Length: 310
Image (tube, rainbow, N blue to C red; front, side, top):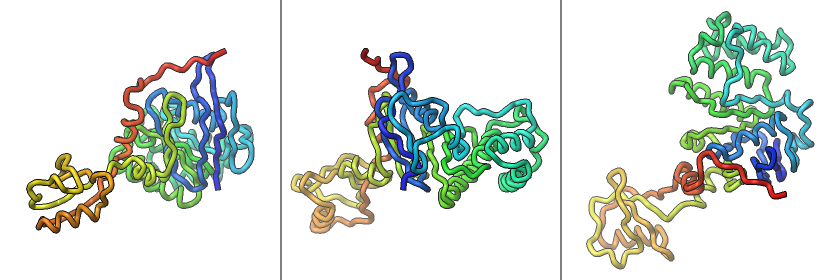
């Protein structure tokens, strides 16, 4: 069941199209990747989902009913790429204040903050000011303030920026736990390897339009190019009749492309008949980064908005 549905959303700024008829749904408990180059429309989409902007056309359905920002925004946790903490305010009081804005009592806020501060080794930070924290420390604090009220929908925009590997893994583990416990997460980043590791499903937007929508597994299958890696100590001479073409080498193995009409089993059978010794045989699937570049290659990284015709 979908927690969030976007139905034909459009957003204009003056006569410029920022979001142009985008639809997709995010299932409950899903870790959902929202991807796109700079200027693609991701931030505008997120601001409509969080009630900061209203769509000019289309509908947002949240938890089975029309999205009402006044009532529903308390069930959303949003961690923007541009951090929103008060630099001069002490961390403890600031965290309580932000939790109370989301509907927690002071007592509940203090109890939850203590639990998260212990988990993230932040107990000694209580009386520090945000301006005294490093970027990584600020990132951990921002994450805690985002998820403290147990929101149904969590939106994380570049959540690992500035974190060292240890703290990256710490927050990554918490993201998985939150999803397992029923939270739905929209994850936006430029790091495609993180998307492959974390996300169940992705949407790619470019120039205000949706150009890709599917599970990570299915997307990689859809864009595969019949490439295989063969670990072999020898390759038979004269491969004119082989069911494959050698296209390169990678990690001490041959990279081959299977010819149209042939199957992986045909390749193995041919090699064995020719007396080749095979140590490994693996399909090479494209990375999300390869797919991303293929789909947006040649488009400007900071696009010019398309003019709306009168």
